[in-house]
Length: 460
Image (cartoon, rainbow, N blue to C red; front, side, top):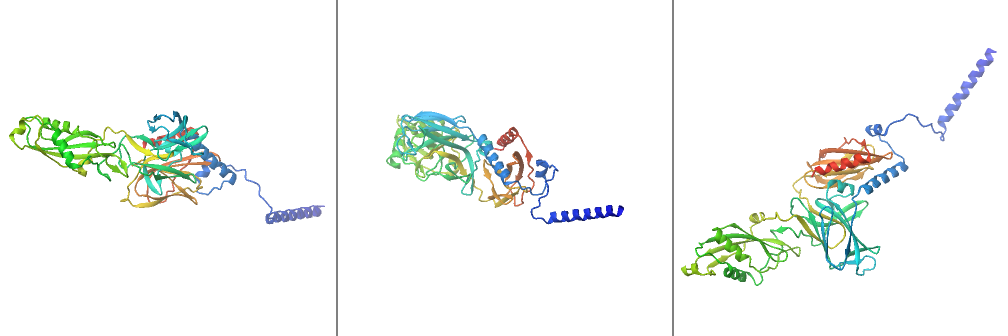
């Protein structure tokens, strides 16, 4: 009996071993899923690569896009009458001037009459720019922004556009004036925006010291000299000397903001100012074919001809008048009264007040961020020294920023959805050739994510 029982167990063991071996070699064999649980946070901290399923990956991408859509700036709506000139003042002080009868239907090309609805989104802060998925790049070149807008018009359910001979004037509020601001139009491609300089783009509020075409007095210089000589009433006891003056010839040709930068004596200086205030309109200076405000320096030499001049109520003293353009002096022109960049646009849609950031002297490099886990992440760098935001491009498991200035201080701001949960990484660093490997993602709530984004507004 014992021998038979032992033989049974031996046969049973052999049978089980054979079955187990056959299972391992079976191509259709699928091992049971492990019941060991690993947290998402732990997974993100490990150096191993975690491959999410295609379904989850698609869902994570959709949730990330939905986050941006939900947190984008809300549009402001204005109902205007197309038969009247209208000025719109937006929530963040943007001013938009629209001439009467400026619109046509995008569908039919016919003029729009009656009421039209204007929608405006304003993007001035870093958080607004980030949440709008915007950046400051023009054909690969870095821009410094003074504000972005999205302007659209609708009438009776149809989109509208500006007539070919019409423009809107936009005033972008500013704290400090920066030279070289231009208007850019934005175009979306593959969820990225690229900015292009608008035709004939100049800041109409800026006072230019260098222009393509200088202001011209009607009739020429000799008539201007004669006019000034006949309209300056000097005091009886005036003395010889030179009065240095500076004034602005605005885009309409008016003489404004007359100043004496170096004078002879107050009563003589005042007499010169009063005489210059009588100057008629000039033909204004131009940049890119557009009339602009121009600084004009004019030193006036006053020289006594004879004793009879002193008793003359209207001085006929010889005055040698010579226009002078001195770049060093002109840069000090008074612009304190200007609080806006004034730009003219012939298009609606995405509009940007920008200037090219001149970093030709800085070495340019490619900045690389290694994400380790995956590259399906929204990554931006925010520059500290100037208001610029750059979005990175995915390349395998890295994010690449091409041709940017080395040594600049930046903040990396990265958002991803992983297993349908939002994660955030924020890090201050400097642009260098060293690959950035140390981003630490932490799971965040929607409120936390929004608060962390708004903290970036303190950068600039």
